[in-house]
Length: 176
Image (spheres, rainbow, N blue to C red):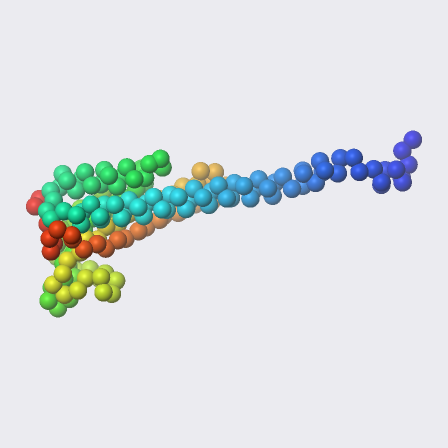
């Protein structure tokens, strides 16, 4: 017969009850770490795409529209194994006049609208000195959670890089 004293002192099943109480917290912690890691890796890949397209452009002295398209293809490839449907990129050649005013020389975009030539830009301080040029590369990637419950709304990662041309004073694009 089970008495009150034996019922209170009986410890069989305590581990199972403790596990049942901790399991939801442990699962939330595990999936949160997975989600955070995936988000960080995706952000890193999107930034790498912007860096790559800018670097490839800065290594050229002149490009064509087709070659810029190839550079965008390389940028898209850097996102592997993540989906690329929301990846947007833009390459812009900037030049500063003798007064230091920075304007767009040419611009091409994939998913992002290209800037009109002659548009005045305001890059960060000391990026482009008077009578110099630079290549501005941008990427935008909308990350959607793989689980959906931990991060219900998509997050957009944006990166911008400024690089100086390596082989000439300015990267030109004949048909951009």
